[in-house]
Image 1: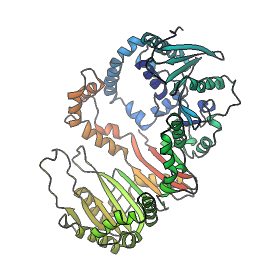
Image 2: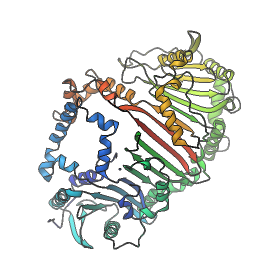
Image 3: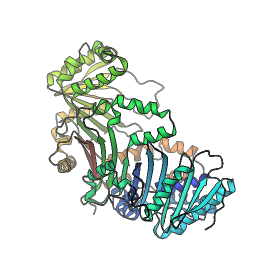
Image 4: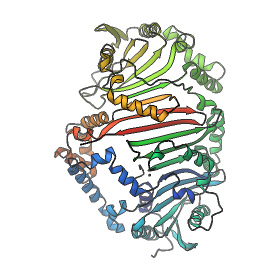
Length: 602
């Protein structure tokens, strides 16, 4: 392999790094190999521990099975052909086809971001190419040749028995690339502050060769170990993706590069954000009985302060309200101690604006409008349960997804009083409308002539349904909730799909009571997107058709849809089962778990 000793980084170098580092980054062993060779001050880390295993698991998932459906295959083939066509120039210059490029990762792909109070930013990439090392070598040769052609510098040295190349851009004052190939392993990165930081990449190579075993690694870092030990459910199968970050450590590295960032860091303790310990996420696609499990862990110092202490979560029951219809596409309910939460917001606000500022500038204005005292009259009358629901208003249009907001009060009297107070304070903006044995308030505003045709016009509505205050921007959704209130058999509570998700939530929570519950139907989302964005008369498709180049992927999609190669939406919907999620608030922080059930097909 031969490289010029001078050159510049062209756009293909960037594409190469992105292709290697981010390829299939949506999919991933609890301790990836890269974590054992990346330094301890790696502040951010993204890993797919085994691409081949992730691909196999993906093909068995709902999305993978859908993409492989025989009825969708003609559409996928046309889009793939357009991608291949668009990559011809890249293949001509590099000698690497799109198929060969995508086949490069065979084992682990990991990206790290090194940063600390004593270390400038360095991006690290580790890639196991398996039998495709020759393809990686071709791309490295191309980057070196292109750099030499553009007049930069490529300096070659030996690190252990590995050839290491330091690539300096021609007009770049600081950033330098470092790349090395050791058999099937690619180790490289970018030192953003100059050549001296390439030592970080050299040390990674030495650890990989076993000659720097004494130096601390990410795998030994306490925060990273805490994250791995808190992966609760995804580890029941094989981990297909890991993300870890220490936001404050990332900012510390920025301070070493830009002293002005010290001002930003100085503000964090005032807001209590210095208590944000770390963040981690994990995903598995092969846990028995599930389509996927995704976890997000936000680790917080204990006790919490400032902004991190604002949401005073409570524990509660996730059973949907009796009027939530079975037809909702998404349902989220959360329990929060509202008086305590508002008090904490007030304290932080006053810390910046002065004593009593939140009362004068926020609460007093609301109090005058409602003729009620929010703190004394409203908040103590709430239970702390807040619900958000989404529903599709038909016919389906671009903005057919409507939202509903539900606030639980301690009794029906308090709910009715609050609704009446809001309605009266609005003047003529709301009028009462009878609907069956119930009633609700609806906005009197008219649809402007300038409002786009074919779009749903949002109309605010408000009602008291039992002990709940309910608002939405869709009269159709409000009336559907009122119908459901008198027909419990149509409620989400009695839905078999919800009961399945609810059972899984209880199993995941175990002895702990969640503070947040979610339920969703991905098939409804698919139907919405299909009808609103992919139908032949969709304004989105018309816009793409006008703007997209003749031989682009966008044009290929349009032609495939017009050619009838996109199957009926029911073909796609049949692969998806309901999804759910929960939030557990404990002494270590906030822990969210989201999951999808797997549908059995004949």
